[in-house]
Length: 140
Image 1 (tube, one colour):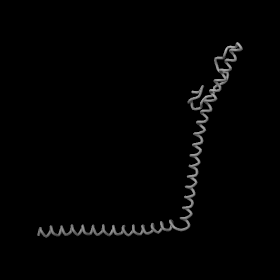
Image 2 (spheres, helix red, strand yellow):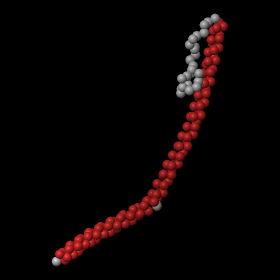
Image 3 (tube, rainbow, N blue to C red):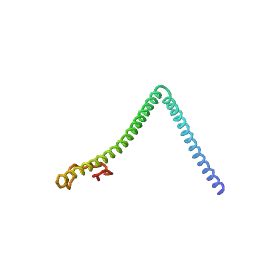
Image 4 (tube, helix red, strand yellow):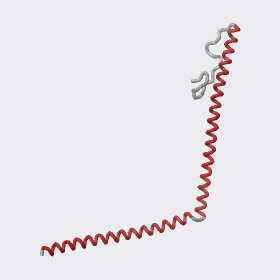
C-alpha cells in the first residue's frame, strides 16, 4: 500500500513536470514563430529601403555631404598651414622691426650726444612688443 502511494506520487510528480515542460515548449515555439515573422518583416523592409530610387537619393545625398566635408577639411588644413607660415613670418618681422627701432634709438642718442643734449633714459620711440612674448627686442 505504501509502495503504491509512493509510486502514484512519483507518477504525479513526473506528469506535472511533463505538463510544465510541454507548456514551456509551446511557449518557446510561439516565441520562435513570432521572431521568424518579425525577421521576415525586417528583411523585407531592409530590401525595400536598400533598393530603389529612395535609396539612390539617400546615397547620393550622403556622398555629396561627405565630399563637401572632405573639401572643407582640406580648405581648413590649407588655411591652418597659411596661418602657421604667416605667424612665423610675422614674428620674424617683429624681431627685425624691434632691431631697427633699437638701431634708430642708438642713432638718436648719438646725435643728441653730439649736439650736447643728454640722451634720454626712456626710449623716444616705443619698442614693438611680440604678441606671444617670445623673441623680439622689448617684448615679454
